[in-house]
Image (cartoon, one colour):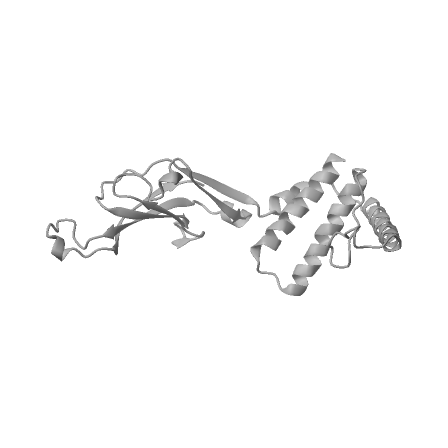
Length: 219
């Protein structure tokens, strides 16, 4: 029973990742939603949980808006589908390692980063762009995480102090098989053209200029 549930959970996590990607066409999205609801109903059945009746699109039927007869037919139809599904699953001769192979192919790896402090004497505001970088292919493989840091040594949004967290998601096995992955922080100074400017009339405010970069091996 545990291996059955484990296998289904791996499938559901993989399908959830595909649904959240937002890249599926409308017809494939509808088909995948039906697969998800079918898998959930099947899991509820083998765990002896309540049966959930749905419409053709996989949405849960509202008992307040559906007649008793319609609900009865929906229950009967759902029970027949699940019974057939159980017979199909029992007839399959799946090896024990099937669930583990699906787990290993599921692109659900994530990297959690907690920014505690930023120590760099700039003298002005700064923007920190953090991303994952593949040094072998010289390319960034993730979105940027932006942190705005003030000139006084604190985040611009002071309520974010000790709460600067980010999760880089959807890292697949292809990413984990890379030789190295670095966490790179690009520093952009925001302010005057030259820090040595002392005459306020010559100040040019709001200029964004590259200031530095740092990196550390993470995977």
